[in-house]
Image (cartoon, rainbow over all chains, first blue to last red; front, top):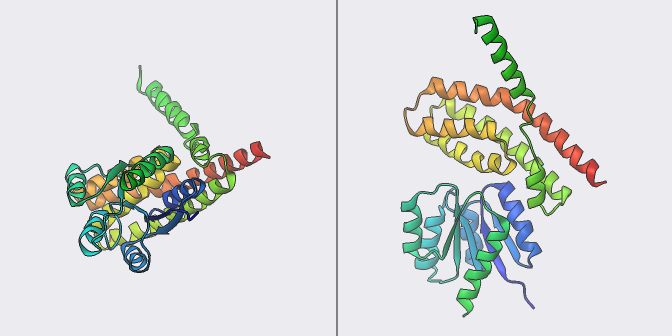
Length: 125
Length: 138
């Protein structure tokens, strides 16, 4: 059976490494990208099953990424945003643009796994 | 209480504060599912991030780039929170706040110096804590 692919867009290498470890341990195939340019390049050639993205990212914010996926790529793949800044306006904006879920930092890896499974299941139901 | 006694009390408290451990890697080791190899990798990234942060802030202070400093502080907070290094986290939070409010360069330079002075001790504690955890596992 093919592993489900997750695109993890996180410029904090420590958090990126830790989350990659947990997600891979759970059986996902993870592509870790540390900035918006890498993310766009990846999406030109691959379509993951889910995207997990930090909101504050260099070159392309998580919110711009949601806009890019929904409006440019015309894709409804699940997008889960993470951020340390609990700016309500940002979060509302992200949901309005079509983000599926939001998690604030510090991230609890077990909680992230539950949320990822949930957004993926919502898409397959 | 006379002034000499007060000074002694302050000195004693300062000493207690200085000797109080500022690093505890147990929680992050749990998040690493007990994998010391992963913890070692995170510690390596942590040290690298701090060095990049310090260089980045120095350049941006010279350029008075408050937005850049605020962004760098925001990013390093996540790493400090993960390592539970509250003393440095507090400094980074203050620096970010100053950049977003009164943009006081002198205050920022002072906080940056505080960070620079605090870090070597933290670095040593991280190394000894990591060594202790490795020894415990072997």
